[in-house]
Length: 197
Image (tube, rainbow, N blue to C red; front, top):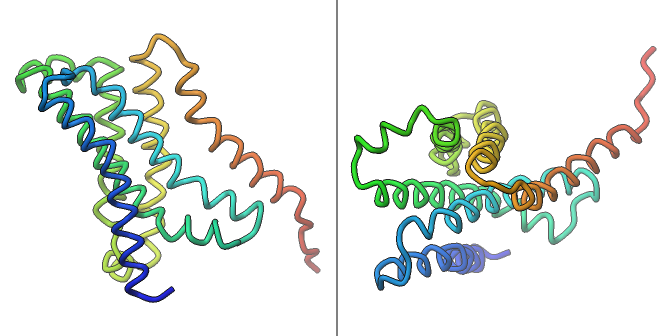
């Protein structure tokens, strides 16, 4: 793909990724929704984008590389950064609703709250190193840093399950990754190992 086409497609991708946030903020600004009404959609978007960023790896392992998966892999860093931005929006809405730092500190010790802080902090290193320059500077360490997204996702689901009365929605969001990882494991188990002499 030509460089200018890549730039155009990335711009289009970011416009699509920004639309849900723009819609949420517009509703907030127009008084159609309170900050607390937007906790759920902003958090949902963060988790969905993490899942979307993690899916193409195991799917490529199982199905092999194809045009769709190669393009998906090419934008997964964008999806991961967008997930972090939605997590930040989730935090801003939470802070707006509580109205003060003291109120936020009072809740930090609650399991449903500190797991959310943990997820955000774990996403931070992956987000700030999601650039070509970071890849060049960090070398092999870059992949290690990016793998922190996995515990970040687990912390996100813990945060979700501790605050939601129902587990079904979280399970639906996590199901694609569980299926993809199961397929990857199945493929690895079925691949014959080379005999060593």
